[in-house]
Image (cartoon, rainbow, N blue to C red; front, top):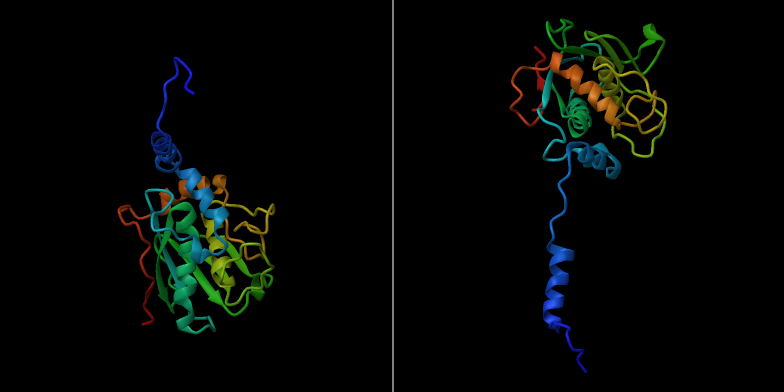
Length: 222
């Protein structure tokens, strides 16, 4: 029985409206901070955390010279290590390192230098040591403690940590997952840390900010 004064609506119309508002209705856009936060929280490894589109633009590319003349690692080890360093920084902060790998000890005129060595006994036998942009030293195989979402390579993680110092970060001991925590596999950056490093990167980066990718490390062992 119908009630007077009420409009009868076809069940088909009801189903169509339900489908539109629950399935097709567009979601609100995400800003850069929310994208970066979701990337950190949902990714269990650095391999999962390198999105096609970076969370921040422009991409700041900083020259980085890798010195392996004293290292005892195989040269073939370095490509995956260096790529992971860039994955850690690009996926979270929109920062890349334009790397060249050399055996000599001549530092860059502008940029950052990292030396890989079998041990750091002269620096207290730490995993890594930062003294300045042209004096960063990393053990071939750092010894790190666990984290809930670990990096793959202890060497990549420790190098990324020391580069954080070059970009103005201090140690942060609040979480084993944080990149600036001492001696863990953690690689995540907080929003404040990202803000600090992007500001520092503007003074160190190449002027051309159009590339969206880091580019492969250039190995020149002459």
